[in-house]
Image (cartoon, rainbow over all chains, first blue to last red; front, side, top):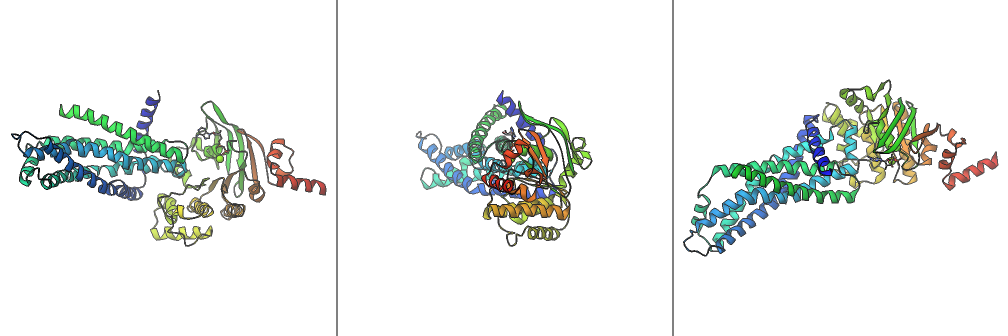
Length: 245
Length: 254
Ligand SMILES: Nc1ncnc2c1ncn2[C@@H]1O[C@H](COP(=O)(O)OP(=O)(O)O)[C@@H](O)[C@H]1O
Ligand SMILES: [Mg+2]
């Protein structure tokens, strides 16, 4: 019963987000701010994690290849496949559910408990459009974050593979270019866009409809992380079934 | 002028407002008083249209909000200023941006004109040289003044204040109360202040409405409130020792 109610309230929220629009000049300013808060400030952590996890993927692949008939190019190939198909789009999104998701929930939630949302409503502003719409737009730039993650993940694999003496630079790069299927890139970016919508709206919903005080803001942020990541994993499974099998 | 007719509001099975009738006058500070939990904030939010009453009508001048379409409600909102209990300043914006916010939303003048108006109202609430500070960097009393500045920047016809002096020391509270009253008189606006503070009643209670458990049980002026025999009102008024002593002295003199 509660779940049905929650699902209903989530979709009603979406309807209201696209209801009456905030003044364009104000909205533009808000969107730029959100791009900075949600996208730009996420780049360092994304870059750090991608580079080193890409490196570990390459090393693990190399260490598990004890059969000499398997060509060394497989290291590059396997790194590319795992980074592009799963690591960058899906696992980065889980990390972003922690970083961006809890930021969104706690900032909207604290506006709720300190009556800042009421203040917007009193002024006749559609607070959902004002707060959530700029986040949805900002997160449309999220695929660029994933491009950075893909690139640095593969770079990390290359550096780790060559530095560790597991593979020659030319073998690795040949592997990266081997058997490339553009449709897989489409699949990766399609799911990234779906995740970005989840990342913008589910934490907003958690923050907007919360009740209580500062303590509840903390609880809502935790809940937000749990729900956002569960939904991302579920969406990943469904999209993969639909597009790849 | 705001007229209230038979307003009922419940949450679930719990009846919070049980049929309120009253009128709030223009050019006066109208006070809504009562114990915590008596429904004052809920009543205020009904007046503002943040809560929809199940029954009853609320007239702004001659038109009921219940009869207004979305556009008329939006226009009404532009004429309303609201001072929230905690200030409700936007903490991602500095003081200047906070006060300028309603202007940016509702008017299309040049930024320099906006800035002139912002500086004028900040001066009116006796705050200068804080433009670039953030809400978290100034004291509670200053935050309240910024919130007043934001509420009046767009020259509202109706001003609502929810417990404007909660969390302030008595002296600052008096300053804030007087500021609200002066602004009301200067601009001839309809001001409604929710409070449970007897000092405010004495200072600025030009019209006082007393709520108890969702019912309006008494209304009058701050002169009348000390003379009434209404038991609920006297219990509330003389709940503090100070007022009890004052009454004893008065009774002796009489
Ligand atoms: N949004 C809400 N949902 C449910 N109950 C509420 C809500 N807001 C207020 N109440 C209840 O209404 C009653 C009156 O509250 P309120 O108007 O805030 O009192 P006060 O006179 O102290 O301002 C309280 O019992 C409160 O629990
Ligand atoms: Mg209250």
